[in-house]
Image (cartoon, rainbow over all chains, first blue to last red):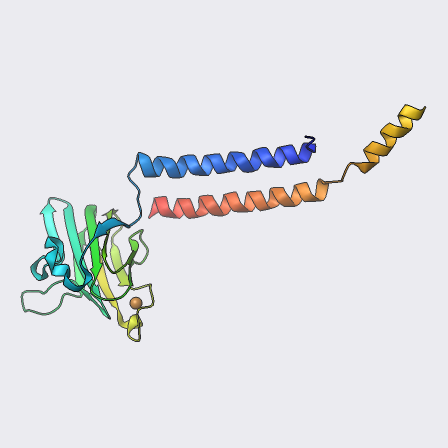
Length: 167
Length: 45
Ligand SMILES: [Cu+2]
């Protein structure tokens, strides 16, 4: 087969870039533990309380150890359940010290929702039947808005909460 | 003499791929820049 000189160059260039991309993504996946946020952990959508993490008393922020936190979120139309504060009111704002490692775990009680801590990599779909989770280090102080970025119905735009990362 | 004529003809048949080459490379560079741009965002956040 005869190939034009230019064809050879762009074939090598294209194949080479593909190899580089795959090596980077593969390194992330197999050595750094990057994985899809919903990766086959199942849950009963009609009874998410059956999962220890989504029992009402375990929702919201939990300190596991120094600089290690878990945030459990029960999403439903059109509300992120982050547990209750001392006065029995629904928590709307979560405060986390800067530099903490946070494991975010979310499940939905009804339809597909989004869970995005805007400005960070915490961005996941919350699908019925699955637990979505991602672990991050919150190392930039500031106020972040959690938004639903999967259209879930008439009150979609009302679905939000706040995260404060403080020094 | 005859051989030379044949050679001349085949050289003329060679497609001119210069423009194609430049556009393929521009597209390639664009893809690489956007790919690493998105990757840098992912890493820095
Ligand atoms: Cu929504």
